[in-house]
Image (cartoon, rainbow, N blue to C red):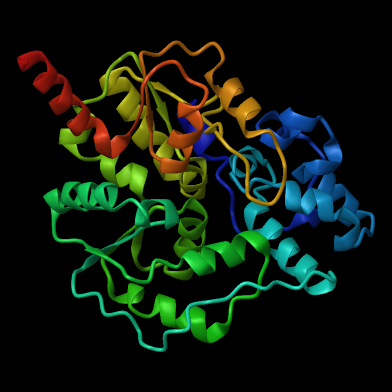
Length: 330
């Protein structure tokens, strides 16, 4: 079964023109589950484009995509569905009357990263000083790592919205990263692109980096629901299926995966109005857990609003145990 799933991992060469209309992407699409409108799915976009539709005619569908990447491993044609959607968003931005007002980093100096490893936090982690320090300390247990002052937040935002990224800004961002041995990336969409931009560098998500640490893994319980960050997971799906299967097998925790080993997203993208709480409740439905462990701070904030059980970030597991033991001692 595992080998069959691995063999469905997407190649990056095919386009929507290769869509056969099998509709397997609908099985895992959170937008389809929410609205039941096939026009809002990868299938719908592909067929519309095959029949001559212009990007402006399918603008709502293009913007509805959560970019979670769940559709890619399911596609038997191995279409690069995320790459195609990003291209469509850029085309839509160019043809629409709504030009982006996004600004990019104006620094002209290239960031100097002295260590061989770097952590690229997202905006949520960057604003959480204690959380960032905790994660850096954990990651340093396997070697020196530096928190990059240029985390590419503006580039990730541009990818999401379809804004054209100035060549000089992209080159400036990538230059110091090319010299590294390992990059730990918090933003799953940025990770998706870095895997393509930096094929010679080891690029992994924060969830994988933390869940590989023995000290963190040992804190997992069989009664935990472990919520995987879907963008990072699906960006390197072929390799990560095995990693998380070993995690589940060793510690017994329930993973936020469906029967096809696709990660179920907790939330929607920033571009549309899909009901985040409805999606999160659907994820939790029927899953009994004494604690929810998340890889994403944004997922934690959302799940805390609807769950009766504790929600902790993966990096907080050691602290949660320490606090519990201190409580017993008093």
